Amino acid sequence: MNDEQKQFYDYILERTAPTNESDMRKLLETTFKNQNNGVFSKKEMMALVPKMVSYLKENTRDEVMKSVKEYGEQHVTE
Image 1 (cartoon, rainbow, N blue to C red):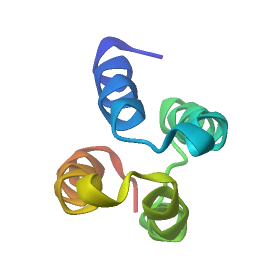
Image 2: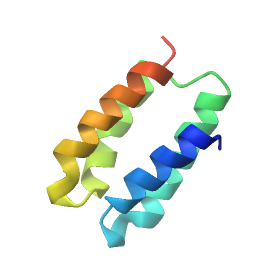
Image 3: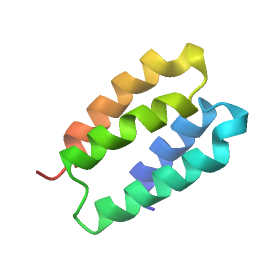
Image 4: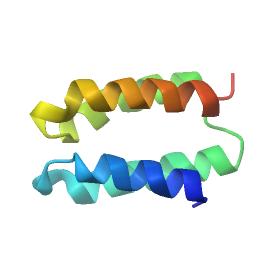
């Protein structure tokens, strides 16, 4: 995990419901692995968003989704 990914990882986990932290960690680690291998597609990002949203604390969802969109635009391959 590079520094930028680590910052994003920490940001997301701080906003994740405690009961979902393990699932969110797995989701993010898989996503970063795919990014690092150059195979993180827009289709994959769109598929993981509903899962990610379901793992978040309800009061953080809008804030996080804005950040996810910005992060995704910079790191998604077509």
